[in-house]
Image (tube, rainbow, N blue to C red; front, top):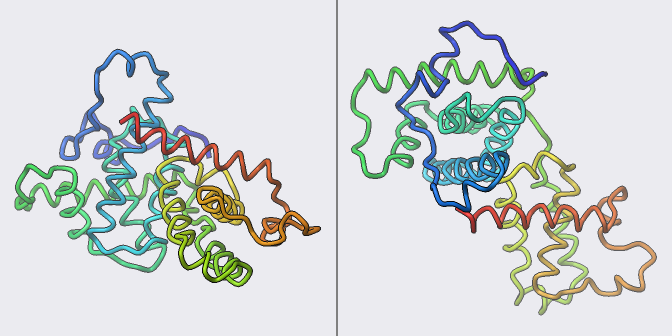
Length: 267
């Protein structure tokens, strides 16, 4: 679907920044180095900030990792079609959380999503009590959900790497020396990296299996751990997990994950 989407004014109004003020836009630091960066880089910083807001809200809502990942993917896919300047990213993120909970059958009450996201965004303000404000946000989310669905062609699902990483970790644990595996937090590091990569669009660019292999490769690299007999093996361990991946592709994904971590340093 193309980036532009023709909507009637009543539907579009709640989402556009100029018309909707309950979820204010992200604040940008006006330092000289930031002004010199490209418009694209500034957008990526905003997206990082919004996904961090979504993750924090998701934790408070007791969402599990799969719905949170799905919410981030919905958010990134939407802004792959639409300009950041045209829509309130906080409202899109909040709606993506609600939509992901439906997609992954981990249903959340709309009122809970609104209240938690509002408190996460406005920590220095009292909770929403006005029924008018709650009703306005509920209506905005309903319109926003339809906008997202139409923008994504009513296809909001994408295969996630979680099940692959779980399988790969179990298999790798059987290959590794038990003492090395138990004293090195490879498992925790891999899951943390997988969670972190959703702050950027790298989650959209690669197959689920490739992302799982890359975070596992990166975790082993961080601790200087080598898979036993990998150098002597005819088939490398990553080829066992995913036949169509190359080491060059793995390193490319790792570089993109590092770019996501670089964004955090620039906030």
